[in-house]
Length: 464
Image (cartoon, rainbow, N blue to C red; front, side, top):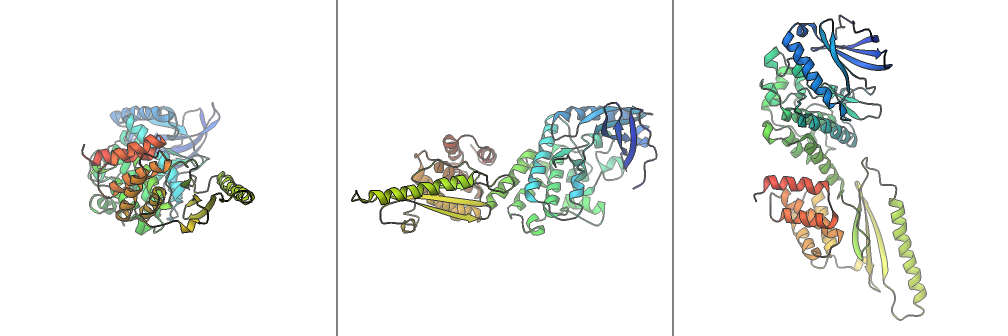
C-alpha cells in the first residue's frame, strides 16, 4: 500500500501517523491536542477535492452521517471540515481493529460471537436506513471493534459522497467486489436492500471463513454476484445448520425485493435457526405442575444459567422429602403416598428436566408411551424432537394431538404446543390456524419476539 503523500492536518492535531491510503484519500491516526484523545482523520483525495460539487456533497453526506453518531453501534464523528481545500472527517479511534482482521485467517469465527456482531451491525444499518442514509460499502473493514469486542459501523455515506456509488461512474468497482450487491455490480444505485445484501455476504464469510462468490479477479467476482446461485454455507462449513442455506438464499437474493425487510430480521432468522438446531425452545420455564417438561435454555454464549443447579437441587430435594414422608406415614396409613420421579436428560445445547407424579406401585417407565396414551406435554416433546430433526411432517400429527389435549388448560406447555404447531405448519407451507395459534400462545405466556417474527412472516405469506 503506497504511503500518503501529505500528512498535513489542522494544528490542533499532532502526533500524526498515516495508517492507510485508499481510493477515497488518506487516513491518519492523530491526537486531538485540545481534548487529549486519539482520533482517526480521513481526508478526501486531492483528485476528488478539486471538484467543487463533489467536495460539497462529501461534506453534506458526512454531516448527515454524523447524525447517526448517537447510535451505540455507529462510529462517532467528532468533526467535519476542510484543510488546505480538502474535506476531512474526524472520528473516534477504536482499538479493537476491524472484522477484516478476524476473517484474514480464512477460518470460521465462533457462531455465538458472529451472531452478536451481526446483531450490532444490523442495529446500526436499520437505524441509518430509517434516517434515509444508505452505507453503500458494508464490508468487514468498515465493521470496527471497540475494546469490549462490540461492533461499530464506520463510513456511512462516504462512498456516495466520494462519487463512488457504482463502478459505472468511476470505471472501477467500489471497495471489495466480494460484498457488492447484484444491482451495484450492474451499475445501478445502491439502496438499503444493497446494504442488507452486503451484510449477508459478511455473515456468510464470518461463518465459513471465505466469501460466497470468491473468484480470481474482482470483475469475475462481481459477475458471480449477478449470475451465480447462492452457494451452501453448510457445505462450506458442515458445523453450520443445514437450515442456514435457506436463510442465506433469501438474504442474498438477486432481486432486492425478495430479501429480508430489515437487517435485524435477517439476523433474527439466523439466531432462530441456531436455537432450533441446539434444541432451545426459547421459552420461559413453566411453573411446577403434576406433569410437565421444562426446557432450560442456554445463555447467549451457550453456557447453562447459574441457577440451574439450584433448580435441580430444589426439585431433587423435594422428591427426597416426599419419599421420607411416604416412608414415615406408611406405618400409619393403608394407602401409600404417590411419589415424584425426576429424570434429567442432556443433549446438544439443552438440558431437559422431567417431573411426574406416579401412582403407588408404578414407575415413570411404566407410564404408557404411545401417542394415544401420551399426555399433551409428552406429545409436545415428541413433536419438538421431530422439529429439531427437521422432520416437520412427522412432527405435525404429534403436535396436533398435543394441542387438542392441552387446549383450555392454561398451562405454559399449552403455549409451547400452540407455537410449535404454528411453526411446523408454516415450515410445511401451510396457513391453517397459524395466526390463531400464535394469539393463543401469546395469551398464555405473554409477548415473545419469536411470536412476533412468525406472525409477521405468516401475515406476509398467508392470505386473509
